[in-house]
Image (cartoon, rainbow, N blue to C red; front, side):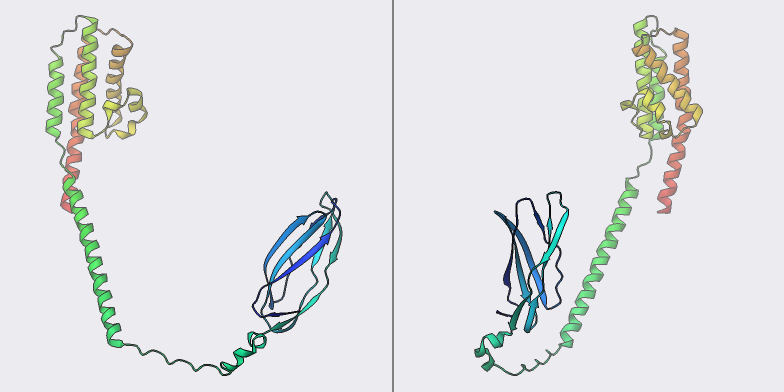
Length: 287
């Protein structure tokens, strides 16, 4: 048998066996002169067929070694092993198989001389690359500086006096509320709760209008106040919820006392607003 170096050949291995047996093909190891391109197994009647595609990478007589296989029972337990016969194949070079190619060239082709490098063009390209890199870095730096400046400009000062005065005016207006009837007290606490929540949201940007009293109490850390102020805030909002939703009837004096507590809360919490405003001014100066 003959073939050419580098040309794939098909090699099939047929194993006849009863249906009660299974055939196992282990991994076959070949030397460097033989390459196993693919292995495909098929079942046909009482036969198992292994189709191999082999390529030889050396000339001369090369043997396909014995190929071991295992015979298993239905429980996949090994019964015995066997091996195929060794096959010797003559591997020819392309020139040996096609003698006409010998006349084309028996000598090694001359080595092609290297292409001369144009130093002037290379230097020009290097300068262009450096210039392009410099322009790109300049654009990035300018863009970062612009973003930093825009962020500082976006830091608008807190309108502390406006939010405080609005809240105080609304709370002062509540003092003239008619608290003779239970329904009037409910309206009073609805307005009281809304004014306090609106003041906190507009001043400290905490979404108190969208949160329940329980949610505010569970997230006490979002408030920049001390514990005493937070406790007063939760107490006012909790009492408002009792009157609004649980139909709790509070006396007129207690209603006015809750109103005074709300005014006191606005007065004391406003000091934190001025601290934040001063801190913001310091940040602007540093930048």
